[in-house]
Length: 460
Image (cartoon, rainbow, N blue to C red):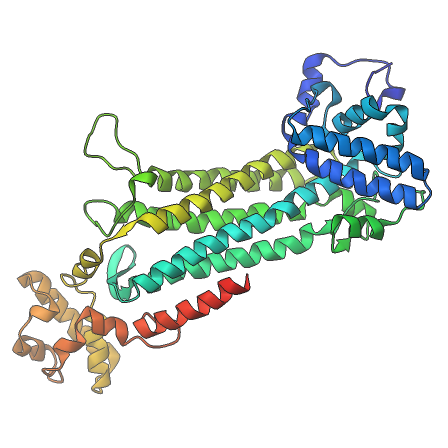
């Protein structure tokens, strides 16, 4: 007979390497606290419902609390022979209190048990993700307020497009991270559901009280279909999807931090705490931590695709394939929390070269749209104005002059509506502050959006 806790109908014994292949304790040991938490709620319900005696419930509960204490003290050792966290805990409990430990599993299965543990694990950590995003957003708000009137080139296609406020640029990422925050907030809704009570797949004949367990564990809702309860991993897929989008935003900003820290741009300089050197080139200061975040984005994407692929062809209800859901989720949780923390540190300690940013808007043609808009306000059809300014830009490229450097006569040769006041309109500061439309880059807008952003963060 097999020596497994489930081995009553088995006569054969698997080789050790087979057990190791099938075991999940190598990663689901991270569910230990949640497994104990779920078991304590379950045994309390069993006792209150009279499914087991009150004395038995107290004995089991005391044993579980002892294991919690051992776990906190680092005294617990898990065994591959016991396969997973559930059988490891049950084995430890049996050693402490004897055969009565077997009554803990009354009215439940490892199927609904692992689903409950996994829900609890994600549920407990989503607030930390939201808190980390909030700290990053606050850092962006502080930077935006400090640099609201710093002018920089805005880019499309990585070409100078129009001057913008650096604060306005920072607030673009604030908005992205706010959407990330809201996605994780919604993720909590589908995570905050109790699967326990679904048993293996069909429910149980015991008179359990699922609401009591839900209240004990702090779940807002209960799965209403036992098949769905044990087979649903949407909450994990949502988490991985949300994490992937978050990493997209971090990776995009990382790319800009890396570029802007080069000699060619020199817009910013990351602190030594978030940079590394070269083993051969003494002058190098590498943005390795930004690069690592950019690189780790691929691992997060892979985890999402991995679990999507695992789930896409599974028949109802539970299948062993679903054992592959947790390791990736654990790793991604670690990755995004570390990545957001690193970004908060990088941004809060970097140096902004405001003069260099603004200077980059004075030797280009990013004010060409200003001249076209200027002519449009004089009654010139915009397409005609666009063509005239295009001719001036071409002339400037050929002569090595910016629009600001051209004489009034040269400007008027392209369109007679141009007057002396055009030179003030062509400054990058004027270009920024004229854009007062909702969502525009004018400094007054930026300050209003910082105030709005602060209200959003305070409401988190």
